[in-house]
Image 1: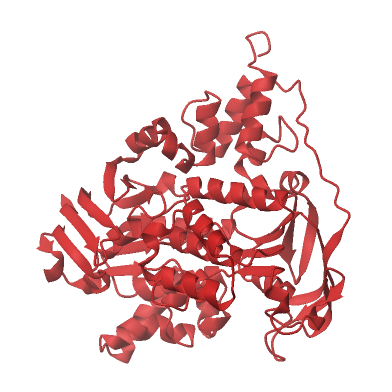
Image 2: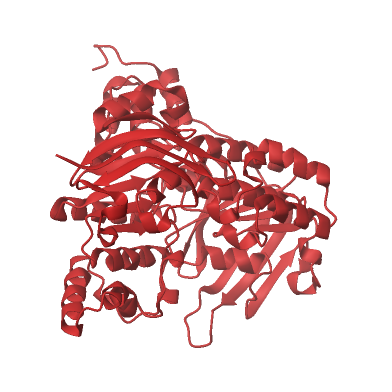
Length: 546
């Protein structure tokens, strides 16, 4: 029986910058629905139109019906919305208060509140977080607390806007498994906007594909996989296991163990995989024995950390939420100040760069939350003010606007942009100063796969022109395709720093799908293109081989 449906749903922002056109779909109660599409296609807008309190200002046509009621008449407290960044959702100082906040706002008695908290805290196994300050939470912990504060309200619909995009790979998988358990245990209808379909596709019942404001596909998971696989511009949205399967004619294999088995059975391993390792000599950043903590009472986040970054390399930093990747970037970029140790940039002590000299054609920093870069009402106003106030190259701004396709977004507020659009605008802004060293904190967050490929090309072009790039990321597939060296942060230090092929090939958890799928056949393969190329070079086994 239909529980949630849209009929000819259309929306246009007040500045006519974007339109959703004639969106029609229906979900049964308890469906797990995935919404996919390129950056800026309208996914977030569609999600916001399903909860009346956060519907953006603009021209709205068509209907949304839930459980037989028009959206305006439905009990909105039964629909909860989870943002991409949990920090925008958390309002209380302590975890206990955060989870209880919605119940207290409803005026429930203390005993009822405590009972509901006990249930949800035990269900999600977060007893150890209850007395923590919300500012102390890691990304994964913050997501669980936000989810708890929503679940305790007994919702019938959960809307999630790329809620796993800021989580490390292991935490992301756990979070998605929790969502599916909630979906199955309580029959809650879940609508999840995602760019990354790894680990989530197997949970999905139905899929919506949006393109430039129009719904180009809606159907069951199996049919949707065929649609995505047969459509060149959406093939990259498929999980890497399915991509490998399709490229190498293994069928439509979703699970890694099936891909590994099919590869071994079908392809030879007579030719070894080889790759070039670039030798770097000139040091551009050198950190020695760094110590950093947020206050004297807290544990060191960086502890006796030493790191050398070489001129004209791309260095990747991976690791779990809260291990210090962002803290390290901010110290190296002069934004945070370590209390012991030394940092040299171009053989000069970082403390001797006075005023803003460090950021004039030398360093640029892309923060994890790019909204913090924007101060003006619209994207266009902000970029123009930035260029004028620092006397930057206007011609470069025009070039970047075209390169990142930002002109249609110039009249929009930064707060109205999708995650990928915001990343594009932020990247444009930091490139205006023509930096020699770039620090990028989760640069692919909110980006679809085609946009990630564009970003890859831009980074490789910057490197070819002499730039040095340090990237902190949870996107293992992306960093494997661009980085010269990769290290993992743990216990205040950077560990296992080596060339990217050696790093990912020697890791069992922080690694890529291609590496896990092929390491029994081809040593040091870490990307899908590498795997496809070496497998085809080796050729297919014949009956005698088997």
